[in-house]
Image 1 (spheres, one colour):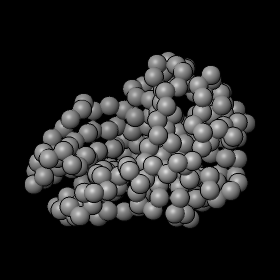
Image 2 (cartoon, rainbow, N blue to C red):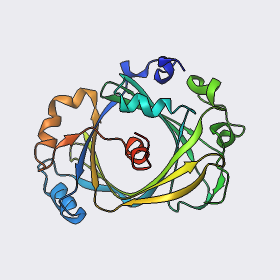
Image 3 (cartoon, helix red, strand yellow):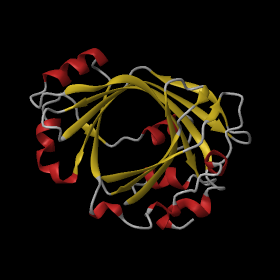
Length: 238
């Protein structure tokens, strides 16, 4: 598959895009992390209620998107279906998301998917199966039959925003990873990470000069991290 797979047909990064800085924390409790966020001089406040985020990631048979991320290619793509609430059962409003990265700057394209039922005994199917009659994004239209489920993950997320609304911050915890194994691609082989908390700072490209003020106030370091890569590595793909 061509290296250009992760490049959009029209590059939206010239007019939009954001930075996403992740901080992995293993030695501070989630409650203490939330306390530090609320004490931050940027005056973060919670803007949504806590909820559970569920994702089913898709990749090519040769795991091209995974290896692009592992090898640090300048253009990277993640393809996933996302929904909120219960992992298993009827899913009323799943959404297809294409997350593209050019260097450190990312964009996200979203498209509503048809309602579906998702459970551990279901055949997850290819992305074309999830799309149904929905028209796929042009940049992946030719490969929807090849994109197959590889990983399912789930985590708790809390949402915060700075007083000036320039910076958003999320706290993810209780991460669970399931393989979506061939040939039936069922969600199985549960792995739980109840140690790591992921703090993510999101902001527009134009605000990058002020980002160090946000991150430097925390006693943890920014690191490169991907839940998709982490989950696949924990399931044995290295």
